[in-house]
Amino acid sequence: MFKFHSIRSRLTVNFLAIIAAVMIITSLFLYNQLERFFVNNMLDSLTRTGIEAGESAAGLLRNPIDITLRLSAHADSVSRLAGARVIFVNSQMEVIADSVRVGGLLGQTLDREEIATALAGEVGSSVLVSELTGQRVVQVAVPILGEGSDVIGVVFLSGSLHELYGGDQMPGILGRLRNYLLLAMLLAAAVVGGGSVLLARRFTGPLEVLAKAARRMGEGKLDQQIVVSSRDEIGYLAEQLNIMAARLNYYTSSLKHFASNVSHELRTPLASLSLITKSMKDYDMEPEQRKEFLDDLDQELDRLIALVHDLLELTKLEEGIKRTVTFCLAELLSEMAAQLTPRFERQDVRLVTDLPPLPVWVDGSPLLIRQAVHNLLDNALNYTSAGGWIRISVWLEHRWTGVKIEDTGIGIPEKDLPNLFERFYRVEQARTREAGGTGLGLAIVKETILAHGGKIWVESKEGAGSAFYFTLPLHRSVNNN
Ligand code: ADP
Image 1 (cartoon, protein in one colour):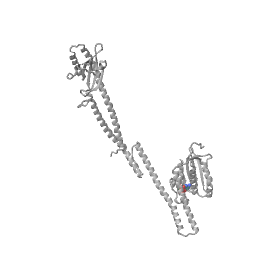
Image 2 (cartoon, helix red, strand yellow):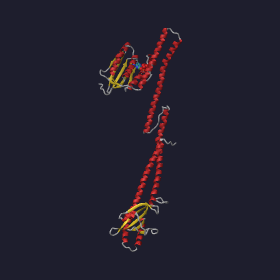
Image 3 (spheres, rainbow, N blue to C red):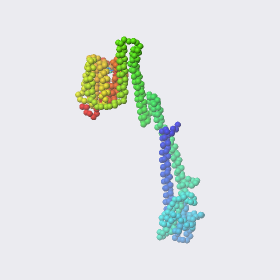
């Protein structure tokens, strides 16, 4: 179907307009040049003939006997040669010979501008439409010079441009040219029209494929791949659409996954809460038993609050870091260690630090980094038994600084390591829930480090302890040596 607003139709119309414009301009130019060339040629040739005829006429005029007869014969022969009407005029503008015998102008006064010019010694010429024949004619008047170079008469030649312009029946050269040009224009339009339709189809075909695919993607069918083999902009667009669809697909499925995880996580504490409140409502309880129930309720509420808190943290991290400051990482870690030592000591776990003596400047949010390190230390403490130790160490590279938090705890099975930083991923469901974890701690750490432009990884051996590593880019303008 021909849709007027489609690229195909617009390309075709534009191509046709361009070709028509080019052809019209070329034709006008050609037409004009040819007309001028032909007319000038005729003028030149008539002038030359006129000069020659004038010279011979000057000879004839010297002998006045039978002058009209001889001049008329001369006019006839010149007329046949030149294919033009030839008239001889004396210095009083009287026609003394005319190649047109019947109905000619012999004896009449020919008061014309060209003849006046010729009598003044110049060649007079004009191009006009003949009153008699209605045809265009070229007229030339050449002076006939006497012995003393005075003007004794004029040769007046009138040549028809019939060959150029044609008549009623026969088209002239220009007419035929116009027809050829018109035909060429029609042919070019047909070729260009057909060509542009084919060309446009070649271009718009893949675009239609893209448009259909984009519509399907818009409808939510994101698991499709567009097959466009071209290596041009359209191919690139298809590639980008494929990447976009794959990303969207990934995000949607992880969002679904996340939402189902969140509901699952909320269900357990909410079910407990409901059970506790129902029991307290339905049964008469001793104050002690009531207190036990209230303690459970409190615990479940804490778990819910922790979950909502962690979820909020993650959402905030997705929006990126809002306020960035330059701070000393070593100082932050040493402060944290000092604050946390009493808690570690209470559990008989030693907290040691191995920090560089010089400042380690990094850019970012000290609050978020503190939270991330806190999560790592919390985990380390949770999974390390009494008598063990935890060490925070910092190392420096060219443009990076790295932090290692290692413990002598229970370690993590190798199969769990690749998924450890995923949201709600737990090594053993029981062991973290019991420890009060939300399963979001490491996901928050990872998002924080990534938001700061760093990397994070873990090394661990079951039963032998774990080591969590992360890096951060050093502050640029300050020399961190
Ligand atoms: P949570 O907030 O529930 O602790 P995390 O995301 O922090 O969840 O941890 C994910 C899993 O990794 C948990 O199941 C936990 O058992 C395990 N884990 C994290 N850190 C350590 C560690 N230092 N030693 C052993 N296991 C760990």
